[in-house]
Image 1: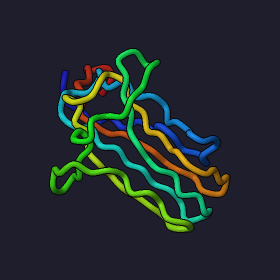
Image 2: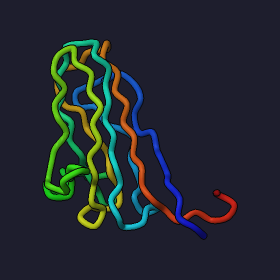
Image 3: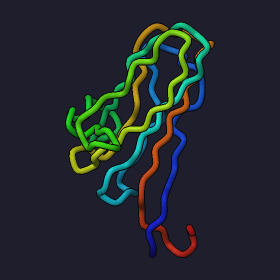
Amino acid sequence: MYNTIKIDNLFVEAQASNPDYSATLDTSIFQRGPIYLNVACNATGTDTPAITVEHSLDDSTYAAVPAASLMNILTGAADTFTTPTASTAQDEVLALNLQQCKRYVRVVLTGAVSSARTFSIAAAGVYQATETEG
C-alpha cells in the first residue's frame, strides 16, 4: 500500500433546486489529514447561493460542519466559502479538517436558482491505495 491523491467530482451542473446538494463524499477512505474542497462557478447568471458544508454519521441526517473545521488553505484560520456575486466567476479552495467531521460530507447550495450558472465541486485528499489501484 502507498499514499496517493484521490480526486472526486461531487457536482458538475447548474443548481437545479433550492437547496441543491453535491454527491456525498465518504471520507473514511482518506487519511485523517484535511481534504480540499474546490467550488467553482461560471460568470453567467444572477443567482447568489450560499455555499455550506454538511456532515453525517449515517448518510441520512445532516448538519453543518463545525465552523473551525473549514479552513483557509494559506492561513489555517477558520473560513467559509464566498457567496458568488451576480454574473461573477468564482474558483475557491478551502481545507476541511476531517478530525472534526463525521464520516459523510456534502456541499450545499442554498438560494435562488438560475439554470444559467454552472457549479463544479470537487474534493481531493490523500488516501492509502493498494498496488492494484495505483
